[in-house]
Amino acid sequence: MLAAYITHPDCARHDMGPQHPECPQRLSAVHDQLLMRGLLDHMVPCDAPLATPEQLGRAHHALYVQELMAKSPSEGLVQVDPDTSMGPHTLQAALRAAGAVVEATELVLSGQVSTAFCAVRPPGHHAERAAAMGFCFFNNVAVGIRHALDVHGLQRVALIDFDVHHGNGSEDIFRGDARVLMCSIFEQGLYPFNGERATGPNMVNVGLPTRSGSEAFREAVTGHWLPALEAFRPELIYVSAGFDAHREDDMGNLGLVDADYEWVTARLMDVAERHCRGRLISCLEGGYVLNPLGRSAAAHVKALIGAA
Ligand SMILES: [Zn+2]
Image 1 (cartoon, rainbow, N blue to C red):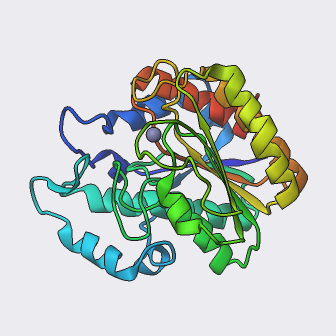
Image 2 (image 1 turned 60 degrees about the horizontal axis):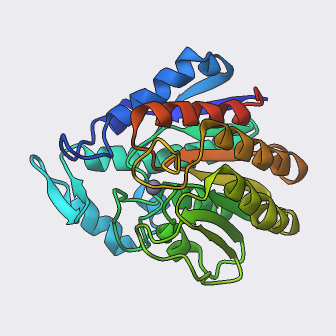
Image 3 (image 1 turned 30 degrees about the vertical axis):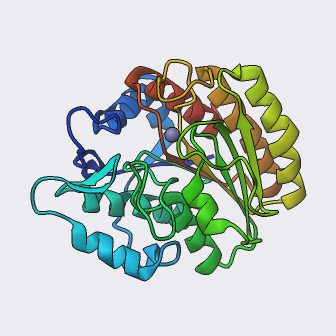
């Protein structure tokens, strides 16, 4: 079973300042762990192409895409929300990040690989149809999903989000779209302070209390996600893979451990084997403490390539 590893050096050039947790070193932390554990030996390396305005426009308002592109500074930082700013290299990184998921979709649907991991930044799941927020500019996974639906004609796609924060952007883009089932867990009371109430029949949001731990997480997956996925029978699974629910990541307090990421990925691969011919595309979202980020991503990728 072949897996693609999609990334690009441009993704490490986006820099929101020395104190910002969404830092370029996140990508080398992930890469180093994958390399050290021999996981990259099992993966096909691919450069992320730039997403086109047409591809971005499937998930975002065309005017939003134009306005964001126009804000790109030649020097310094331009604030787009209290936590999110654009530097001279941000737009290129954001276009690569969204392009990575489009490329993953092409590689998987053409049968060249079964699975793909997009090691990209900026992340995407807080980016709404017409708003950058929470370190996100374009909703990378949503752009990939719309490519699968609108260009390749898929009819049922699942989006799984295990980042500690609710994927409000993905929810904004896919609410009411019966072609997409979104299954999400998140920590209650955390940014972006929504998600508690599912906004449509295609949204399976599970808010977990602070310090829930591994057992509650796994119960949420087996009790809520897996039955919904079995009933939906997706043709392809996308994962918004944020690793900030890890107990060593101070961005949240859910208390997960490395093994939880391997476990949940293996459960999703079971679903992919049964319904999707093993096809699953994962894209990095959050995860801000470098060591647990790298270890958790490696645990996730290990299950993704079937080495678990
Ligand atoms: Zn997050």
